[in-house]
Amino acid sequence: MRKLNNWMILAGILLIMGGVVIVWVTIRKNLPSPFDIASASGGSDYFLPLIAPASGGDISGSATQVGAPTVDAGESFTPEATPQARPVGMTPDRLVIPEINLEAPILPVDYKTITVSDKVYYQWLAPDEYAVGWQDSSALLGVPGNTVLNGHHNAYGKVFKDLVKLEIGDVISVYSGSQEFRYQVVVKMLLPERFTPLDTRLENARWIEPSADQRVTLVTCWPADSNTHRVVIVAFPIESPSISSGATPMTQSPEITICYNNTSMTVNQSALGQYSNYTEGVCPQEISGLTVKKSVIESSYTLVGDHLHYTYVVANTGTVALNGVVVLDDKTIVACPITKLEPAESMTCTAIYIVKNADLANEDIVNTTYAAAHARDTLVKSPAVSQTVIRFLKLILSAKCAEDPAKNSGWTVENKNSYPLGYEYSIDGGVADVGTVSANSTITFDTPAGSGTGVMSLYVDGLLQNNALAVRGCK
Image 1: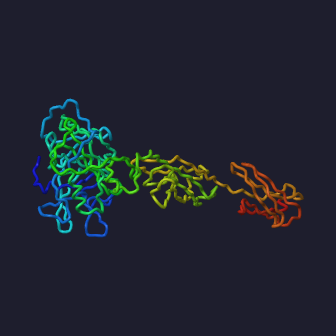
Image 2: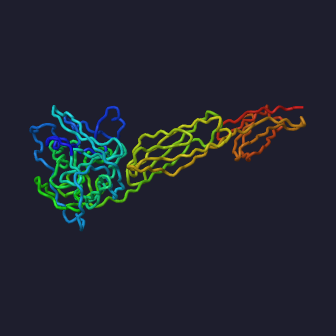
């Protein structure tokens, strides 16, 4: 185990976690939440994920107790009946937690220094890949001490994205080569960090300081969209549940199961003030649901270049918020006003499609649409819906000459559509009537003798279709 002076160990340690670590200016804007520095509420102080001073000297208002808090394992801890002999001083290289389907390599990680208000602090890093970080100045496996593991929860593979789901009594395995070291979870905490005083962060940092007993401490951030808290999991070796009294014990009040931010967790009753709007008991089962309803103003089109105006009503029909909501249409691009929908919330999106030459070959324009979003880390899709806009071929109106000049002249009206069309017409602005032209058929209108010039005007839904002049005496 590498040596660092005691202040570095107290100091070093920043709970960084699945998503809290290094701020690289070149990538920060692409990450889902702030990492190691974000403006605190109204002051020059900064949000640092668990900090401690890098050199000796007192910090006004900071915690001065050295060593990780002791923990009473309680009745929930069940040791193995026959302890197994273990080699000592082994480097961790793999973590397995069956309860959350986690198996990941463990990589040694270093620290960096950060200056805040002219004081220097240490911040532990985490692997920028799907791997767990071992703070390499913390304890090796099989010897007394605190083995500290951290990892991202909302970036770089999200190795610790489900760490918050662990419960008291769950078993974890840490390997060094083929040698397995088994531990049982005895403490689960959510510690507030963002916008908290410096001495609170230093007190939080005690959980990753050295301990007189054997333990493994796992750390990440929570929740994924804000990183306001730290998830801290403490586990003891299954064959060695007793705890020595190194530092002053941290009092543990009775535990209670609560639902906070849609996550079920067991916390100490004394810590309930940290959780706003919590409810007692296990969270109800989350149901994700998304629907989209589509309509179009135009029921038909006629020419290339015609505009079709679509409207989409997207609704969250589940019990969990949806993020990254988009509407995908195979004909056009859909614009939506927002990208997040709370349960029972809906929004209206729009799109315009311009008729193309290729549409004329198919005549009817059929487009298919569905909505997509993420409920936490799960992709949610709505059922697909289709819309049909028919091609409206104008009625073809032409003059018809009578075979016998003494007989009436007239007009033919041809409907080339595969559906019937209603019409209105007038002759010389005077004679008017309505009727229907059957699909793919032709009808003939006769002009009474002496009816004037015989100009017929033809309308469909009030729109003028064509004009024609019947000429008497064609022969």
